[in-house]
Image: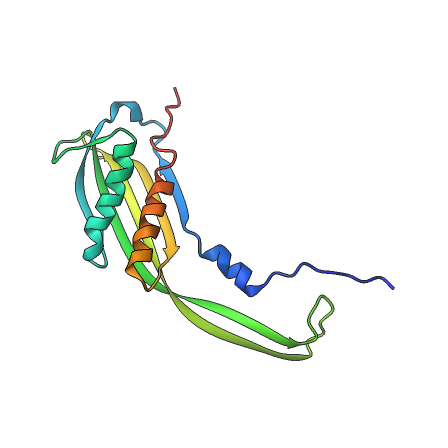
Length: 171
C-alpha cells in the first residue's frame, strides 16, 4: 500500500509570512541621481501627527547615510512622505474531522476573523527644479499595539527602502 504525504502548511506559518514588511521601490530611469547631493522636505504627513517627525528622522538617517545633505530649502531634490494606517481582516479557517489529502468533507470548518492594523509609508523624491517624481519607495507592515515596536519597524522599513538607493545610472 502506497502512502501519500502532502506538504502541510500551517496557518501560523502563513501568517508569519505576512508579518514581514513589504517594500517596493521604483524610479525614473532617465534621472541622473549623481547630480543630486542635497534635499529639502516639502512635508511629512501621517494619520497620527506624532509619527510625522519619526518618519522624517528615519528618512533623514537613510539619505544622510547615502551621502545626501539635508538643507532647509532649495535642495537638489525635494522629499514628501505620507504614512497611513488601515484595519485589515485576516481570516483563519480550522478544519476538524479527517485531515489530509483525501479528506472527503466530513467534519466541520470554523472560520475566525481577526483585525490587524496595517501601516503604509510612501516616500516620494522629486527633482526640485523640474518638480518631476524621480523615486518612490513604499513600505507596508502589520503594526504592533506597542509604539516602541512600531518605531523599530519604521526604522527597518526605511533601511530596506533605501538599501539600493540611489539607483545606478543607466549610462
